[in-house]
Image 1: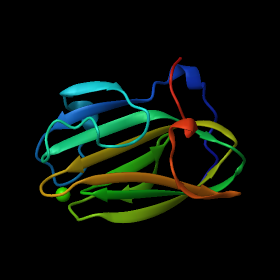
Image 2 (image 1 turned 120 degrees about the vertical axis):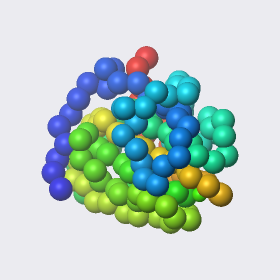
Image 3 (image 1 turned 180 degrees about the vertical axis):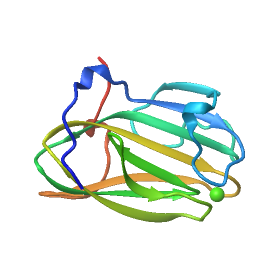
Image 4 (image 1 turned 90 degrees about the vertical axis):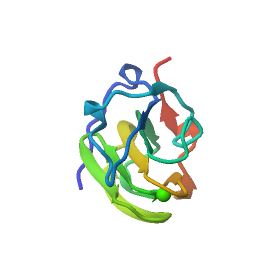
Length: 150
Ligand SMILES: [Ca+2]
């Protein structure tokens, strides 16, 4: 656990890249050509084109209200991974039905880069990202907490 350094929010876009493929784990999306990409308001699967064998990578910036230890929750079917900066904070990877994993990270007040990788192989799908921290009951990460380039 460490305090992630601040970065300039205007250098980041809140976006998604959509992929199609057959994976058993979240792949290295940087090595795969996306089918589609664009801005999205929140983490979610609304931009999917297929029901199975697809994935997303979401990037953006999350606004942290005050210094403290935060819990990040990642619920998914199938696998997902959440990074703050370069740190893997929640690892919910692999083939499984809907399940939630939690990770703890100490964060300074301010804006931090966040990245979520997700895939669904077959059957049902789902993705939910939540946060809990000092004075902040567990809540889905809302559009107001996420930044993108103006
Ligand atoms: Ca599935």
